[in-house]
Length: 334
Image (cartoon, rainbow, N blue to C red; front, side, top):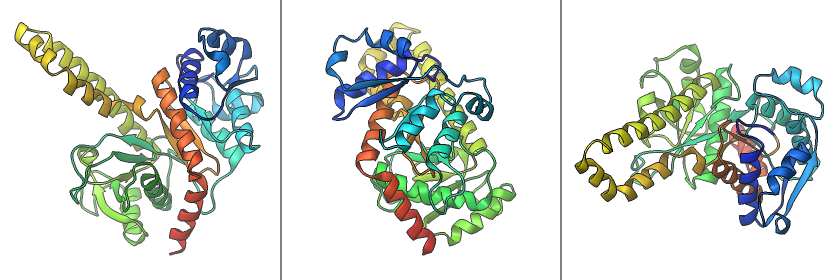
């Protein structure tokens, strides 16, 4: 029931995912509203889709803590409880991020040795990594789960981000950067300066400070920061992509020559759109909680919801949470 266009786009995305999954999808929320949306899909009866009714939801403008206390049967809380009970393998929500984080934390608890959860958003990256291999993207965390952080939390984010990069991007030895206002170790605020020193001694391939302009360069596979900074960076990136696309459309429609150029370059522009479209990934895993959780954008399209559910299914099949638990514990002990 969460998201700007819910429940329609969420149901549509779940149907798209169910058509490709060898697994079922459980939709939690207002049963009547969900069934109305499902009726639009002629193959609904052939798909493994289950509806769990609950009348309550957390609105985007509500305080998550107060809403979850007043609404013990809120859809995101019920969905998290289904995962905790073993009736589902993963939780996906495009609704209130704060409520999703709190519901996941309450239902699953935290992984040993991890104090704060972090959203791991995958961003596009340009060209090749510094070792010459092609870049498969950049993992930015935290992108909005933990607004206030301490230096040791950024080290924990680095450990989890590196583990996720190995699992999701197939990068054997991820390079970890620290988002700051300068490449020099002494640049930044107290948080980044202290985190820099801790990361130098951490069991990760620390690439040093990364300026915002280098975020998409491929110079680091994982970039860590506090959730306030990361969320701003993510939102600026999304807005810039939409602005650049709009400007290109305006310029390419100016004259007959530019319109002809557009026709000849359509494939390149489609490929560009695919590389920068957040809907290709669909959501950001919430790392640190002891249950698989993927958080989607409030404006998630059906394609984005589908991609997020498929991501959750892949991570669940790979036993990602257990691997993350083992790897994070081993590296913290080393």
